[in-house]
Length: 309
Image (cartoon, rainbow, N blue to C red; front, side, top):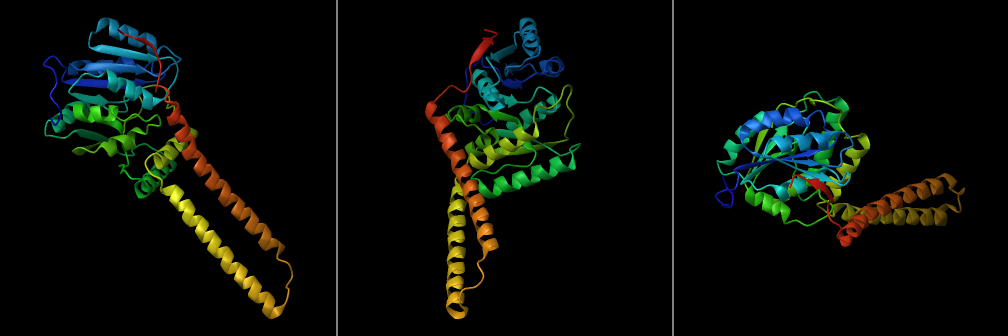
């Protein structure tokens, strides 16, 4: 495995599991993972159900199980970060608690890592998804790969194995606005993709609403590039050029044929169009300024309410 050497007593494998309202899933997931002989780190992201009680019970009966519980919901990015900070293994696997990331793939991921890969990325197909979800996902990845400085594979999510040096590289990145898929791609290192068939949730419903997915897509588009701002400059120059050409045409037409009937409709269309264009640009600039604002406050990524130790 391409990783830095660790202490002799360091576990070979750590498994990080972010959890949010997964009371019904953490038990079955633990049963699927406990035969691997790995360190299992659950991170309760401010659940409002009985998830934390389930984790307390698992940690009490199995010394390989560790848990961290947040003071509130800080998001999956923060939960993954907390899990990686606690992980002591030479390799770290990140997977969801709902069993849509098949634990049976982990031995194959370990085998690929032992061939020298620092990242083994599990990439799911789109089996079982609606036409709208598949289409929107394809458009998102096409836009990200065209406009950002990192490359993302459609279907490749957070389910992956990372070597110790890859984990250390992720932990060395201090930003508050964390887009994990982009960070995993940005650090580089030898990477291999492991395709698998999409699985249904073991229990409960997904917390990824349409609004959260749109915000996640915006994070992906804005977190790793400033090309939208440059596009705004080009758009402004184009609008100015069109206005100049139109002005020359109006003046020439007036000199040749006299004053025509005032173009009320043209003025209204131009005002509305330019107003909308400026509003989009202001919103785009606001998104970047907001990210700078959050970074300058230097708040912690999460607050811990309880751990097993």
